[in-house]
Amino acid sequence: MRPRQFLRRGLSRRVELENMTPLEQLRAGSLVRRLVQLGVGLLLFGVSLALLLRAGLGLEPWGVLAYGVMNFLPLTYGVVSIVISFVVLFLWIPLKQWPGLATVLNAVIVGLAIDGTLAVVPDIKGLGWQLLALFGSVIGNGLAGALYIGSQLGPGPRDGLMVGLSRVTGRSIRLVRTSLEVAVVLVGWLLGGVVGIGTVIYAIGIGPVVQFFLPLVTVRVRRPAAVVESAPESGDPAAGDSDRA
Image (cartoon, rainbow, N blue to C red; front, side):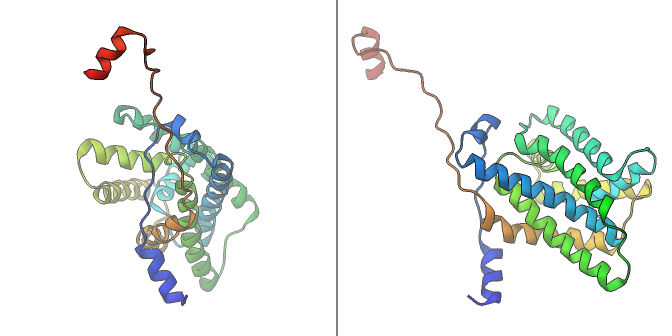
């Protein structure tokens, strides 16, 4: 298959994700593979966000907010990301969103991966290397997002907030996501967050990258059948009445 045909096929394919409760997510099969994929995705997600920071050309929307908050708190970039994730999770309560295993792990592992990467990767110098790091970060982040979403173990904190607001307000996912990210960037910028060309490129590119990779890495699962109460024994007179009702 030619590269252009492969790219077109990836962007045109759609994938159906199961809407499951946390217990159903754990009982849906292929759990080991899904857990490994989830872990790899979350680690890559954190690493790619750290590289985006080191590129110095602008952060993704929630990163702009995290960097702005970091200016006022004696915390690292990764720890601020963890704090923001748990604050967002509290916003799920009035929206009646159900967290999954990936939701909690996302809040913790991504922040730790960010700080771990920042500890060993220095600031990137030279426009060519910065651009390479920027585009590599966007592609890596899109792949990472597809990996953890495709594990079907629950949405991330920010994804769940977006879905919950969309359901409660009746507005489209696209409108809710755009409104959230514009608001987050604005608040983060006012707090001193880093906004630049990288912010724009991330906002434009991350959707198509996730869309391309998601069908390729989504694990097919089978939603567990609902538990049905045992029927009365055939000798019970009530059983016959129930069958005829």
